[in-house]
Image (cartoon, rainbow, N blue to C red):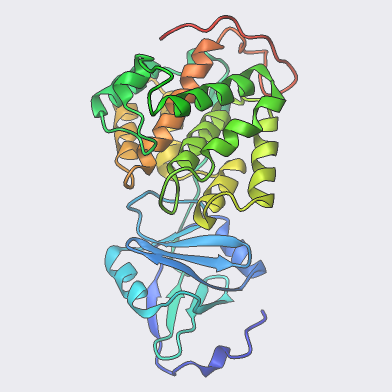
Length: 334
């Protein structure tokens, strides 16, 4: 494995931290791309840039994330103390990361970390009738009450109580335009509303991007959207500087079917009959981050409401997103 030219210039004293959990695909990835840098540092962890891929190292406060390495709060505090942005990082072996701070080098030992992998179980879904908790989803969001990061209020959204002169009307309109295009197969109408949401809002993961994560999660479960959704979104992300590096990484993972455990468990619980389990998982997602969880649930809710409008299209032998598409019937209220 190749090392950087100044790898051995660090102090002989090295602090060692133990990783507790690691994404199942990450060890193989580190063996292929062993050299990177500290990309960003924040309260719950740090991001590493290993060439063109971001790796999160931190707590599980916001869930177990794709390409994540997780450990306790005290270990994360120590790591944040020792590292600086742009410090070099070298995978000495696939389960040993060296942070090359000139005075305070740190080793992250992954040899005893538990491997994790979460997947949305699409094989449990064959039609809209398999989504057992649609009403519970909407009722929980209504009770939750906290507006989305896009300033959409749940009570007005669920009651369809918006007028063209309302500040949030544009968000609702673009969401409906996007979902109608995805479900009716109007490919030329997909890109414009996608760009409306990409990068919209402040923070490392803007609210508009979290909304799209919710749509992608529903698509992963149902396969209901036109495949151009994935193609167009990937092309925009790979060719345009339209959102943050962190959010781009999460969206690309979602395009490949990788989501946090919190998102994955909500979607899997939708096709399980245990309503209390679903509600518990939904509440855990709603509590995630400042508004990331709420915005992701907003995407899930929009996608499921759209499926309800188009539910006549999907049967056990029809695939919206695949070979067959049908014109929509007139839209109906919830």
